[in-house]
Image (cartoon, rainbow, N blue to C red; front, side, top):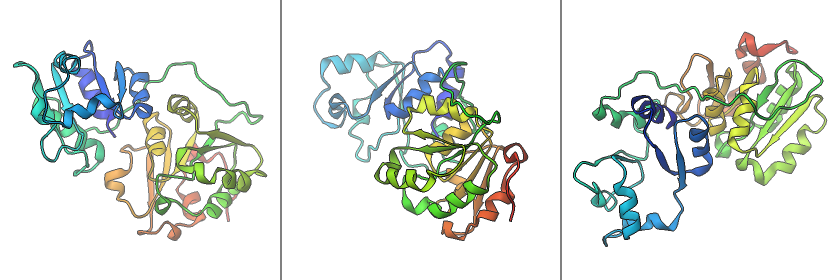
Length: 289
């Protein structure tokens, strides 16, 4: 959801050095796509000084003063961080809420950039990937259908038994995507799908590798999750299941994204609902019923 804002900055200043302090795992995608030059972990001890009243350490102060523009989305309710900026008279400091308040979420992170004259009504972002990357061998020559049955919260997950039924009725081959959110029940997932013919597993892959694999899939099926946003960002047609969260805020924007929602509970969504919603490019044939 921050890639469109980074894309606006990169388009305006193609030669600038743009660095991110935040989630380094996700930030690798920005580096991969040429939107970022470097990523620093938000958990590094040096950043704690930003929330202290004392002057910043000399090295940190000098490093931050080198930037012409600083944009902050970290929580700063008491203004402790903002008091350290600007670091020099011609430095511009901007701040925004860390919690999206306007839909879609990507728009929230683009909104402060209007003050710089950077305006857009398109909150989609296509991630440019290098031509090389990981491939999965499969006897079936067709591109894979990717299925991500997890998310960051069990409340946002469709029942595993229905995922299994859906996978059995799809005309594969299938790429089962499992991530850090599923580590507590990986063995259970492996066991449920062990006898599915033509199944390939993407188990906790680095995001750049996963992005490349998803870009080669003909369809992605998932929930309200970061992996779903990643699939949409690389242009893969998506069918996403939503329940307690608002798709207007959290679904990836784009005509290639279809959302299925039957109220606050995902249990109201049937397997037939999913099969009926598959885009033509993603079907490849399936067993109706």
